[in-house]
Amino acid sequence: MAVSPTEHLKQGLEELQRLLIPNVSLDLLEPLDEFLSLLVKWNKVYNLTAVRDPLEMVDRHLMDSLIMSQWLPSSTSPSDSTVDVIDIGSGAGLPVLPLAIARPDLAFVSIESNGKKTRFQQQCLTQLTLPNVTVINKRVQDVSLKSQLVVSRAFTAPAEFLSIAAPLCAKQGRVAIMLGRAERFPETLSNDFVLEEFVEVSVPGTESARHVAVCRRQ
Image (cartoon, rainbow, N blue to C red; front, side, top):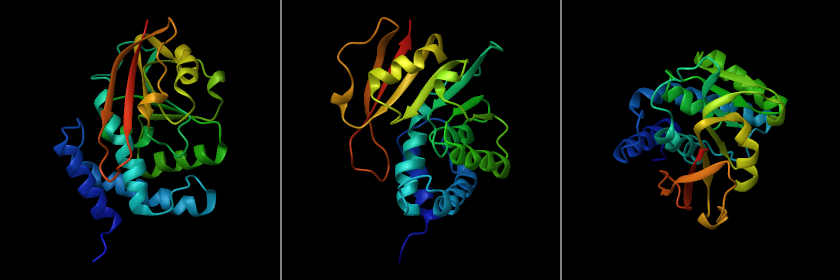
């Protein structure tokens, strides 16, 4: 018998729990399942992602996003001028929306220049009741914010991404870069950052190599 997307999502959440990924529980099943349904529905018209199979969306989008929960700030920023997390080039709201569902205590900002993708995200905020996310429909170069953590999924090459992320990252804040092959990460960094952590991660439902580089802003 074929597994339903909802059951596949439940299995993925259980696997993340076994991997001891923080802030992941079966309480996330209902809102993530609703997000998945919206993504499947809107993708038929707006072509938000090349992934069409809902089961594959669970693995390649939801699980891949939630794995980043382990690098989220432990608590919200004490400064009114600094948000907690910025997602650059968030596309269909990945990883920002799954992370915001997992951490309702943090303030997230989603930056995406594509209007149809930000409209989808706004619809998700309304239907999922996510008051902790602000969606900005601009080029990242036109945004003036500071954040404890800057993230992105395949926005651009790592060295270029660090250069783009630097103005948005608070001093002693961090940038988390999601990579496939480890060798894509540059051997040397600019003076703005030091490499704090470089790890291989296991994403439920995927066999391809995944790595995360965490760089701290000097």
